[in-house]
Length: 147
Image 1 (cartoon, rainbow, N blue to C red):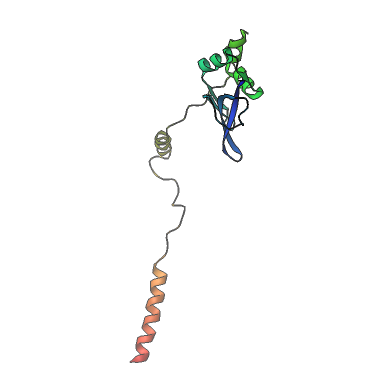
Image 2: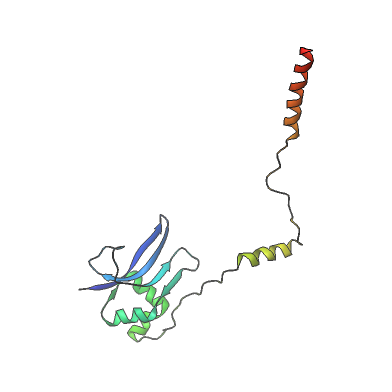
């Protein structure tokens, strides 16, 4: 049985993300997998690449063949160089920026604004007075004409 390390596509149209999986070479692209060893999100900036190095090296060691896109990802993470014994095992993977907590961002924005909102509400309030006046006007002429 030939085993391949390939990408399993997930996500919506124009918003793909992938799982790096070990699967039988005869299965379809997003078919049944033996094991999931990582994930790849190409739309993030920089792209998110997370591969379990230990499991990838194990599967490469027992004869699993990576597809060309997966081999490129393994070169970026440095796992392919470790497997082949080449220099540059640290890879060229760019780190992901740390996410700022939403509450911390909100508090920072409040501090920058001086604890007061800088603008009015985006939607104006409804004016109920003109509707009430029209109702009063229509009620008054009807009463004197009957008397």
